[in-house]
Amino acid sequence: MVKESNTTSRREFIKGSAILTAGLATTPLISYANETPPIESSDNLYLIGPQKGYTPQIGTLLSTMTMMRTWVIGTVKDLTVEQLDFQIDEQSNSIGAMLFHLAATERYYQLNTFDEISWGQWSDDIKKEWDVPMGLGEKGREVIKGNPIGFYLDKLKEVREITKKEFAKRDDEWIMKSEPFFSNQPTNNYAKWFHVCEHESNHRGQIKFIIKRLPA
Image (cartoon, rainbow, N blue to C red):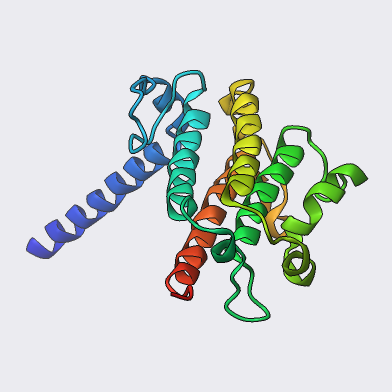
């Protein structure tokens, strides 16, 4: 009798868990976000969530991007030209080049998601301005040098202002829109812009590594 009772209990538990899981899987994230009021505090760097002036999912994403960008700027804002140009070896990128690269990455994702231009199909003028910092490598090491920190911070600010302006024009239906992209897999705009953010996190780690090895 005890054995049958335990078996029945296990079956009921599995059945209940399946129902709960199905319910969670079908809960619309956007409608949940719509119930969360936007964060209106002027000191909201560490408050990840919906932001005033943006739809819930876009505002939450932007708050994450803002926090990461602030950390990047805080890491590099006091560096000299010599420090920005320093390379650990002949194959490495300088801190300045990586900052320019972050601006180029954001610019290209703007063109892809806001202007709906297929990757790499932008105009020659755009390529002339952004292809070198986007690709880095030998050409980047050759030409991205001699700039003060203000040059790179201005580039980052320039593209971020465009992103904020364009985000404000769009809604959560847009950010969930997908197409084949990463490894030709379905990829929504949320994933593309999350990549812009985590890309900055990745390079910030590299930048901090280089800073610790700058000549005294």
